[in-house]
Length: 154
Image (tube, rainbow, N blue to C red):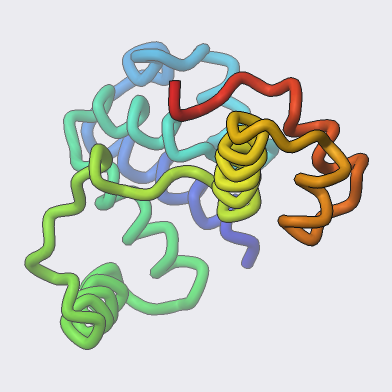
């Protein structure tokens, strides 16, 4: 079974169990989107799953655990026990992630910022683009791109 079909089954089951209409779940999502989710015509986003769960007054993970269980032919308990086991093995079960501390910059973008800093540092010392290219072992076109970017250290 496709995960979107398992999610559709789960969503219909929970909504009917709790006595909600599709309109009741439209907290932050369109009613027609909820309908398409229930028919398995759309895959849910994390944000939409959160909105639908809020509309049903349940935790977003409840929907996902039931859907993943349905897809795999196991109970939500088994899915959650596996999750707990994996989080323990990763030593992350009791860790609270802080988005402010997370490195959200793509590694390539971070390297670009560092290259811009290096180019500007040498530029400030009076080197021209060709000299900077040689010093940093970069192509002159790469140095040219970074040469005119704003200095991230200012």
